[in-house]
Image 1 (cartoon, helix red, strand yellow):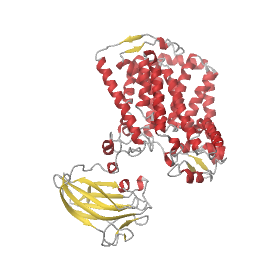
Image 2 (tube, one colour; image 1 turned 180 degrees about the horizontal axis):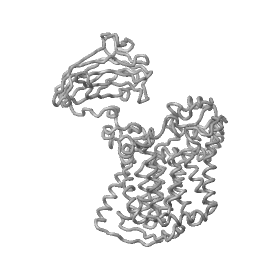
Image 3 (cartoon, one colour; image 1 turned 180 degrees about the vertical axis):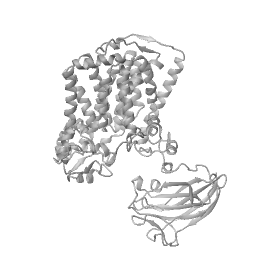
Image 4 (cartoon, helix red, strand yellow; image 1 turned 90 degrees about the vertical axis):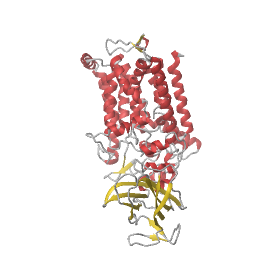
Length: 627
């Protein structure tokens, strides 16, 4: 079993990915849950535009696609250029990688009698299963690479960790059509061809290296950074730099082949821009950019919204593993470390550092092949208590390093460390799999997670709508309320000039408060109240929604402010649509602790948050109670 452990691990990983894909078949999902939706639609749109509809400039077919399939909440995947033509927001690289699977899907649509419009079932399934195939291919070659340098156990555990305990599982099995899974495999192939190139450069592996770099950069422009991997690969010390430069000088023709391939592939994007806009260069991301001097490092690493180590804590071991990789496998260190540091910096500098509706930090996924090197070094050095002794006289010879003997190291506390590692690995696998389950229809908030909501739903298979209040507030009373005292009631039967009242929908009495596109705010309702030890208040009202607002930032808000001499000392808010259904009066409330803070009044107001949808409000009440 020892000699086959990495192979067994690989097939277990394949089973895990395929099982997850069948559990949540994106190719069968409707509307914005479909495989070809949101950002993927933007990467993919080149293919139906060019091959089926032959309309890369006006995209006149898009309205029919949007009306029929509803793949996106708004059409942001292309923008109207000054030339009068549409320009795709996302680069063309992924469309090129999709092409073989698109053509197979196009043939399947023809044979099966499906609409040949680029978005029917065969196209959804073709891109989905093509993405899974690419993932399994990348994992197989990653296993081959890691086995050159690390033990079977380290390689096997590395594969299990990246698939079972990281968000790579989600971005292969379910959201594999995103760019990260594809670039992951390109990085794997780049490493393999780099190893072969330094053994014996040929035109073939030179073209392969250029193609990997070019396609990665053409899929995600910042991934041009992967060119650093072959540049620094195999360097062991300062003396190796002179040897490397001499080697490149001697092999200049192969270097030229690499650079030429990168430029040739990159020129595809330039020719597309020139064709549709008349300009050779277009910044298609428009308002999005980078904060180079103020990268969002803390948020990217440990925030509850999208902290990488919060949602993929197994990668903490990879970060620790850079130390043994440097000490014992230095010729493997620099190529990966320089790339990873710059990749991390650019990821954190991007202004949209949470990367939209993503599960965890998806921008790190293409760095996982590199991170598995320090991860495997961590396993061999600290958990298994042995490592391969690899003596390489020069970076041109990587042959047979997998046959090196093992050298034992200090085995003190080895049993304890192995047990701790096993427990941690099992926990992170459970965490990742369970949160992946939550992220697809079971309460997980992939765009605006908060600390309060994270812990409210932690380990909870089916969170309720009431739990979602914690996305907007940190306070929510869970116990039984004692000594309840009503301190305010407004049934909206009076009509201040600043309010709009109606009898269209009424919970009690003759009228209710109406908020709509023209009337966005209620009047401020001021209630005298003083801080009281061990006291909470509940602000509650009745709501009627003819049509629910699904866009979070446009959901109507119930806002509560605590003031002292007109100054706001504390404020709370909930988006009431999170808990409301349509066409029925429903109660909603928010609880707040008033035992701290020196304030003299509570101000309540309602805001429709620029929504065009109507909401009716009746019977506002404020109650004080003991915890």
